[in-house]
Amino acid sequence: MCGIAGHVGPTARELLPAMLGLLKHRGPDDSGIHVSADVGLGMTRLAIIDLVTGQQPMSDPTGRYWIVFNGEIYNFRQLRAALEADGRRFRTRSDTEVILHAYAAYGEACVERLSGMFAFAIWDGAERRLFLARDRLGKKPLYYWHRGHLFLFASEPKALLCHPAVSRALDWPAFHHYLAFGYTPAERSIFDAIHKLPPAHTGTLVDGRLTLSPYWRLPLGVSSPRTGLAESAAAVRDGLREAVRLRLESDVPLGVFLSGGIDSSAVVASMRAVTSGRIATFSVSFGGAAPSYDERPYARLVAKRFETDHHEEILEPDVQTVLPAIVRAFDEPFADSSAIPTYIVAQATARHVKVALSGIGGDETFGGYPRHLGLRVSQLHERLPRWLRHASRALARRLPDSASSRNWSDWARRFTDHPDATLCDRYIGWTRFFGDAELARLAGPALSAHLEPGVDESRQAAFATAGHGDPLDGAFRLDLTTYLPDDLLAMADRMSMSHSLEVRAPFCDHRLVEASLRLAPQIKIPGARLKGLLKTAFAGILPREVLAHRKQGFMIPLGHWLRRDLRAMLEDFLGPHQVRARGLFDVAAVERLKREHLSGAQTHADRLWTLMMAELWMREYLDQHGVWTLR
Image (cartoon, rainbow, N blue to C red; front, side):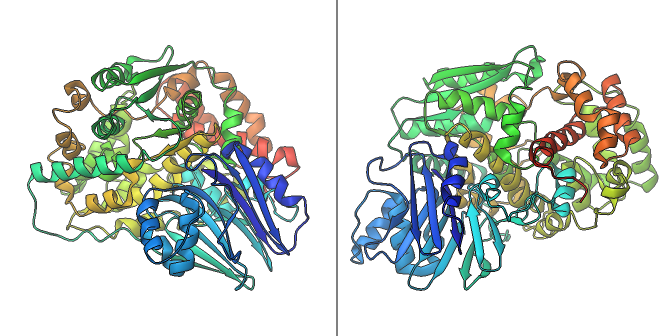
């Protein structure tokens, strides 16, 4: 695991060391630089595999190819054996060298043989060609900036911002996407000139021209002979165990993030099935929070069942001290408040181990979100007479809000909104923080000029690929291609690497994802039982209480905190004077959101948090550098 950076084209000699200095948190164990003429590659290393001889940048024996690599290749031993059978000789035990030899042997098609999480760059000195690649689901990040014959790349935007030509001007479509969904989209960043290599893509730079190419897509969901529940459950259990087994490859100790939910608990159970060694588990809970936010009892049951070395961290509401660090870890505005407990549990875990397994991806792969059931109900709801659909919306708007982690009245309002919308648009609407109409009311005149149609297009396209004759399959594909890589995996990478911790996600094994999409949605969610197939797979293995308790999610009591402990911060970031001075949002619209939330009339925690994190990001990345927001 590393931070990587590099350039093709002339730059100042001190640029690459400065870039690496800003990526030191991603790899504090070692660093290295290779420079040849106007090309430079650099890395900061978190040593996980081959601690002695795995230094980077690394070259092949001829010196023609040089690589910098961030990630882990889980099938590197099998690939190495195949390459050795073809006569290739290795000097290290690292997976980095396997990628290098695979590229020399198979060219750009080498990525199709790699199983793991990765972002890497290979320089071919003979052809003067730079090859970039990113893993299928987007676990590892790769940003780039390109102008003429100068090309820069890095694991995080902060390294690219070292170059004086890299502007901090806002990318307005990315900012629009952030306001809608809480994060920037796959191919863009919040900075106008900085882009992301999308997941499952390669990039080739020759003579100053960059060409991007996809090398993997989610498989089509075609109807096939239906297997029995028991057979499907056994296949899921075996598939997850194999994914976990592959992710135990390490020369340093490993642990597991254990929330107490089904996903992380299944990872622990699978880990115990393939190893008899010590397992360290780590949980976080919230001091003074409502019981509905505390999953410690379930995590303890799992820890006891599988005899783990269990650790708990208590998060108090005073989170102001960690927020600036979280914003600086992302470099972009990020509104998923789960970043706070993720940051805390990563910090606690990093005190004990350098690698942690996580249950990320289980909801997207096996159907774990309440909105998945909402889509099923919507298929019935759209058959109701139009007058009855509209009447249900009026009734839902009168329901009082709840302070519980499950705010049923808010869910009812969101479900009944837009009663005439298509299933696709309804589902997308449930994933948005601000809908189009809400943004139109929120935006001031200057921001309104930058809000253009099309923010939902990539989601609509993903939903349209639904297979099995079932729109729920489209919902799974939407989640797997947008929310999972751009929110959850980005959050896992930044929050863990800010503490020099590597996170591995067995549920994101691309073969497990492919296998899940070959199953019809009604197999994964039988009846109204979220993740019913996964629960059946681990029935009799996990404690009954864990299997039976409702999904909770890695949530914080944000609505409660904004009304109490974080209220002063809310007023600081979104007070009328500050909103008016920033010039982005309508003061009256922001005041209405605050008033309704603080009075308890309606929950706007996620919406307010989206605006607050945008303000904090602008203070850190624009104001401190003399950049005016509305340029």
